[in-house]
Length: 414
Image (cartoon, rainbow, N blue to C red; front, side):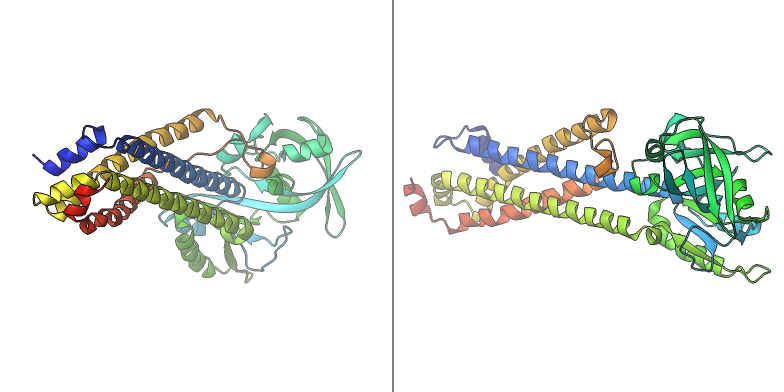
């Protein structure tokens, strides 16, 4: 029988004679670890979920990578590139490419009887991936741009619809400025709402052939290609590889291509999301430290309570290490129990929020209407391993106090 483990278990259950403060101390220490682990899991899953949701919204508007004209024109009044099916096939050969689609943009003004608003028309074609935008539709249905006839139906945001008091089926006059003012009438087919005010106030979606006509381009010209990846983690690597490939393509008229990824297009938002990672890391670090000191104080109290027992064990020849193991076992009971219960509570709360969305947010401030949750099993495993390691390391110090206790003084200790 492991006598050290046996004694530790007796102390934990309060079955050793003497002062009876070990029970409450163990309970408080366990509750501290439960609370710490629960908060860490919630912080990690909410922080990761928030970053993931915001990132997906931004990528939904502009994909991960865009290939455009090598003119460094920063406006939405773009110079065209030529369609190149061979070039698209070469990009698809890279591992990690999910989808490639054509797009075109055109700035203009939308005018109603009482209001006027500057907007960006984004032209989409038959190859456009509607999966993200479809999930944001609040009214109407997606128009069909796959017919042989150019469609005049558009998709506007809920923000613009409220601002200009527009509804499904309304005809909307728009004006575009080039050598002369050009007017077009469009019909509202659907209204979307992403809760990203910066984008919702700006973008409207239209048949790409409308943009081609407005710009006096031929049917072989577009603003560029949008590329969606299987994973955001591949962004930097594939950006470099596609950039090298794009640089080697020169059109017959001498035009060249360049790439722009979503982080380059939206540096402020991604910088803010990077700070969010730092905030989560700081919160987790502070909680681990507090939980560790909670363990230290609890273990010290238990050691002081059992000073007489330590003296008796030393007087009968028990080695310091064996006595230290008693309290390390006791600490292990507290840590493991606290971590297990903390995981159960934390993950249960996460799953409830993920399934039912009980906790709401103001989308005007947070870009989301519910608290987002994303559970990454690997992150949870790392969090638990880190918590266990730090807690065990912080127990070593208090247990060393046992070596300083002499048998005579310990037996007389009250």
